[in-house]
Image 1: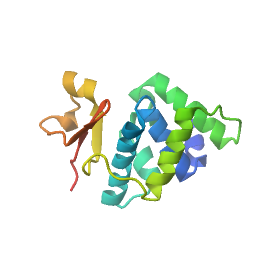
Image 2: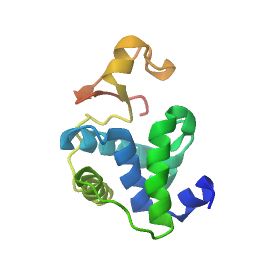
Image 3: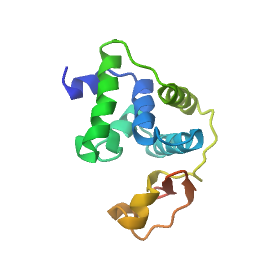
Image 4: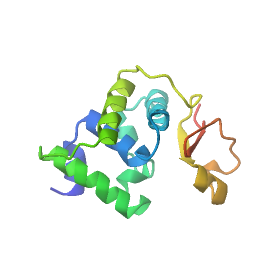
Length: 152
């Protein structure tokens, strides 16, 4: 299976789950929920599916090899195992991301980001902010991420 075929084979829940794991696995539960809030806020504002929001090009670096080759390979390894119904080595964080993904999609979690639809790491924000973040004021900081509201 190609990477594209693997992504197509994943369920919408699996896509959100792996996005959370790929983007925030080193964060606390609050940090993972904050990233999940951004995904949900985009779904609501854009009227798109969770899958489309998560897999849209240049939105979540874990789904792009150019966004970080090592992280992309980790995410795609688990995605491939899920898509091919192979054994996945479950870790506590991977399981937590799954629970948070389900709760997010069922709208059971409180938004920790004041309605944010974008974020970047605090390190990136302080050293070289992405072009889209320049001139923006953060509305929240949770863990190692700074959150912004760009869409109305």
